[in-house]
Image (cartoon, rainbow, N blue to C red; front, side, top):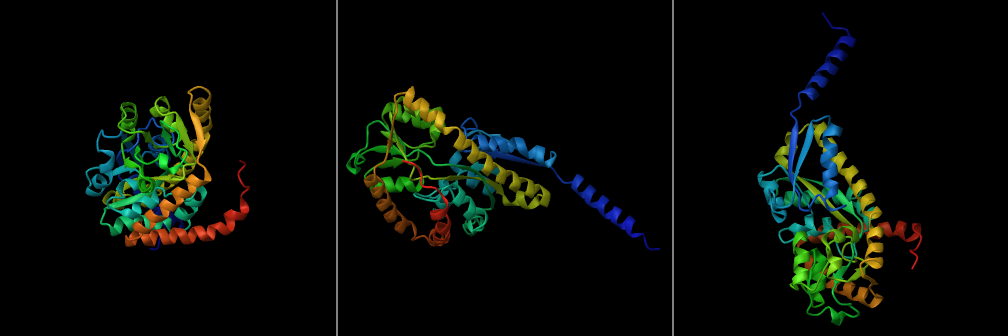
Length: 350
């Protein structure tokens, strides 16, 4: 005897409901590369950890571990890939020594600003190339862009820098491809973790540093020992941070659980850029009005020197085929984007 259509539909709905109800909850144990107390740098992943159980009805949870508590920041990719932890929050540029193209997916000198980066990542080929990079390199991870911040400062210096010659011989903490640019100009660079930078500056182990944005840098106290802060942050016009999930864990999750993670990270991209834009001006005001910091703007001549050095670094990086392929795709996108951006936006007031 055939069952009525209404009964079949009700049975199917009940089966789907029960399947969802019996989905195995997921706990993402997530070591993070940046302290959760750092605004716009660590706070976004703390926000994600708060939102995931709410959005998923408890089916996806996240526990974050402060830098070094579970996994050292520079070991997060290897740990997630090997399954020592099932997730981690970091920045792709940390792996550039192993995968040169990884630097592009965090930030590049004179690179895209936040809206352009988002457009390439989500509607261009960015996200596909991002995952392919890890797959081709043999890493067992799924990647989700999960935070985005606006431009950084160009650095904190103990003495003014008026010409390229003033850079020669400096010891400076510098991140990523921008650090290679600085090396071309005679600077000795090192990638010191954020929590160690102030001590290195105070003791004279380094003469200058870049790290992040004014509101983040003030938490680390750079203004106390380096009174010259330079703009614009030519080396990091926008920076993407990543949530890495062990691919076995990702594949075991339901479609709904994966969608919750992806959508929450996408929401975090919006939330983090809003936060990073909101908190900077108060920090700059305090620096200039209360802390004795002099804010400088690089001269056209200095920016030209940085651009020239970047072109040399770029040619060296493009010897890596994956870097070359990703950069070509981004460059093509940016050329097309100029048709819009060069006409659409009001020029900045000087």
